Length: 213
Image 1 (cartoon, rainbow, N blue to C red):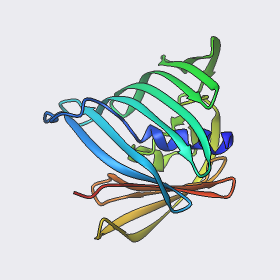
Image 2: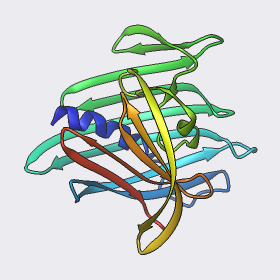
Image 3: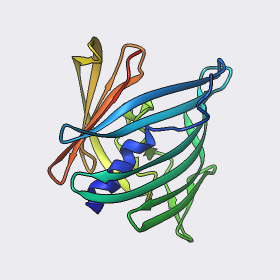
């Protein structure tokens, strides 16, 4: 269970929770559904703030779930990401993965990412990209890092066109299949917006779909 849920962290990064009120023109609220092995286990809600050029500027994540199948599982996560011109600048996050705790910070410097994980310092190269599934730029990367534990992951990406049906609507998408250290599939619509995310781990099929309203 612990390994499955640690990969669910990747999925929850999609869930960027903010104030659930009306969004101004520089802010957007979206919702989605999480399923594991075909069973709905929860909802995700994310809020993205944009700068005047339309680039993602800030993301705040708060997410939790407690039940998966017949086992009770406790998970809580809070992430705060700051972006500029398509590059992650700062991240401050805490995760409690059923008792496994991760307290991490990240700062982009002139030649690397300086990170602290559970009071231990480490560095990441600039050519590594966070596994932020909402960001279309992830489809152009061959080296990722996990935002929870900063683990580096080498990947290959293959693209194909595919129609998907969500909430009774058929959507033309570009599907990206990731293989290597991270196995996942991401579907983006013609506006390069994420509409679906799927992966398998420990024999479990995990899917998140964004509500189409």
